Amino acid sequence: MRSFRIGSLFGIPIKLDLTFLIVLPLFAYLIGSQVGPTTDVLNTVWSAGITTGPLTEGATPWVLGSAAAVGLFVGVVLHELGHSLVAMRYGFPIDSITLWIFGGIASFSEMPEDWKQELQIAIAGPVVSVAVGAVCYAALVSLPASLDAVKFVVGYLAILNFVLAVFNMLPGFPMDGGRVLRALLARNRPYARATQIAAEVGKGFALLLGLWGLFNFQILLVGIAFFIYIGASSESQQVTMKAAFQNVTVRDLMTPREDLHTVGPDASVAELMQRMFTERHTGYPVVDGDDLVGLVTLDDAREVKEVERDAYEVSEVMSRDLRTVSPDTDAMTAIEDIQRHGIGRLLVVDDRGDLVGLISRTDVMTAFNIIQSTGSLEPAREAGTAERAD
Image (cartoon, rainbow, N blue to C red; front, top):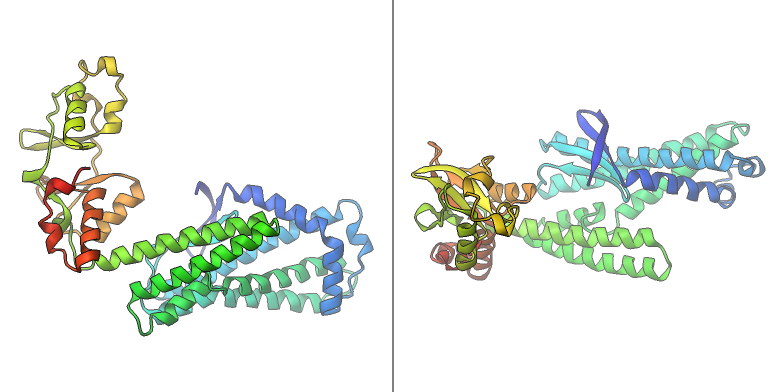
């Protein structure tokens, strides 16, 4: 998501995604256009005693809609802050809270694997939403009749916060209810297995929600369903991979230096492209003698026009800003680094800065598939470079 920071709470950066700037006016419009029916609901359900007429005149509905929309997203921030503060209490840092088209997201640096901790973190958000709804309801019944506009806003926010709490407790992993389900499943199951079950339930819920939204022309629900389905699949895969690579280091996965295909800095780009074609590699460490001086990829080579590739050397197109990792680094740390930066490979260097190997996405997936099939990394260590085509 493309976002910008607007402030911080308890040391947690608060960000707005660009999609939020689209959905906020939309919500303001939708709320403003329903002032009359909403007032009727408040008067019927809670005997609010709000006079409808003045609230539907002139620009008043749009002012009320804007105030309620902003209040809604303040409630969303408080909801995510509830998760975040409990997580921080257990020592899990929070990268940020971001408001976007589907509400809010608290970005965790690391998810808890203790089911009791996850349970408390998951329910903290809905508890905060219920508390915010209760405060708004108390304001609704306490305000004088002359403040109909304010009573409308707080009454509307009371309903929305109660609905937000209930909706988030549905078993749509990775929503709060899905995380509660995983926590309960993890009491007597491995964490990875509990995640897989919760993710399957979440994907089933997402399909039902998406169909409901589709048949009722609720595009927002379809979008939320898509987000839930993708989120469930992604987190399930991540947790499964983390379990598979437990106690595995980069040294166990990397292609060692003696098996690496390297290129010299003075080789022409044309020669490089020919090697890429014949050797089926898309990236090469650039080595000058025994010194690692760069990394060149297919994308780098493609930046040179075909007719000019004989005139350009690898040293002119290679990257000197290298991302490296130690051979003793935890494998999952390296995998997360690859994913975070959207790169295909990491160079493995020792304490002296000498190249000792390379770990690529293909190395990772080859080892992961073998571990999943055999339960052991030994076949992956013996797989050789034949399956390492990246």
